[in-house]
Amino acid sequence: MRPVLIAACLLLLAPITDSWWASGSAVILDPRMVCKKNRRTRGRLAQICRNETGLLKEISRGVTLGATECAHQFRNRRWNCTTQRRSMRKILMRDTRETGFVNAITAAGVTYAITRACTAGSLLECSCQKEVPKPRRGRVAQMPQPPSPAQTDRWQWGGCSDNVRFGLQKSREFMDSRYRKKSDIKTLIKLHNHNAGRLAIKNNMKVECKCHGLSGSCTLRTCWWRMPAFREVGDRLRDRFEGAAKVISSNDGDSFMPESPNIKRPGKKDIIYSEESPDFCSANMKTGSLGTEGRQCNISSAGTDSCDQLCCRRGYVQTTIREAENCNCQFKWCCEVICETCYVKRDIQTCL
Ligand SMILES: *[C@@H]1O[C@H](CO)[C@@H](O)[C@H](O)[C@H]1NC(C)=O
Ligand SMILES: *[C@@H]1O[C@H](CO)[C@@H](O)[C@H](O)[C@H]1NC(C)=O
Ligand SMILES: *[C@@H]1O[C@H](CO)[C@@H](O)[C@H](O)[C@H]1NC(C)=O
Image (spheres, rainbow, N blue to C red):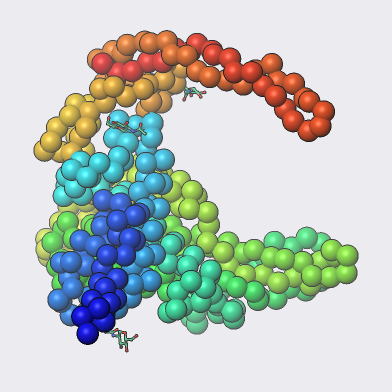
């Protein structure tokens, strides 16, 4: 009797101890923590937490995707989007433009990972979209024509389109539903930025086509929708970060407006914030700034990674490092390339 009982217990435990939480989940928005807090509530979020393990796994992947892209986009800046737990928690408690970017890229990452999983057929709840997505009635048809070389006679929708609608919906359910009843300015901004992140995918879907025809001729083409590369999503959101708009609470208390009346109202795709950023020059536990001491700067750059800017004019130290490189490579019959290892000296600069 006992071994059976133990086996049954192990089975029950399996979804909990399963390694998906431990593996990828970045600290930005830890699905495990979100679920722990909301498991007992009613609504779609708790349902996802209780029942949809496959989906949660993709959400977790999406969070990591967003975090990785964030670190890439900010690698040359004072704030480099490091996912160091304490720092990121502080960033997310504030409401600066960095907070806005993190929220946007996370919502985008979650949408992206779920949609990709639908297309790959790895989620039970969804699949790719087989039929033509029809433009909504009453709207100008936003359906682009596929790029058409002159020799193309006909084309048709077909194949396996990315089903972004499902990804958008699940991203909303998981990330937004628990805030729906609040209308303080911080919550409004958070929901707005989540949406801006999702729109960076939805508004930039691409048409991909394949030719069918005798010997590669393009007499018939089949076309489908594909999401943009996630790097493109990151680039676009980074542009929105550069042009982020500061907003304040409106008089009615449940909407926001631009801080300055001279600025045009931010659109749905824009990243917004309500609080000025710290300069991120020195470490500060309160703001989540890690400071730039010890960061490598670039003396030949004029941008954000220049030694002047990155080191906040404190100066830098130069050290010479030796780097291994392949050299004196020879082609050896047949078929190998044999190289020696050479060491080259390189100067690097790190902030004081
Ligand atoms: C949970 O999953 C079971 C079995 O797949 C299903 O019958 C049930 O309706 C689901 N419950 C919720 C709350 O989604
Ligand atoms: C990001 O900044 C932190 C804090 O200054 C630093 O420890 C880390 O190495 C940086 N990461 C990268 C990839 O430069
Ligand atoms: C330093 O900046 C220059 C100019 O922007 C760039 O060409 C170079 O690749 C950078 N070097 C490093 C190590 O990033």
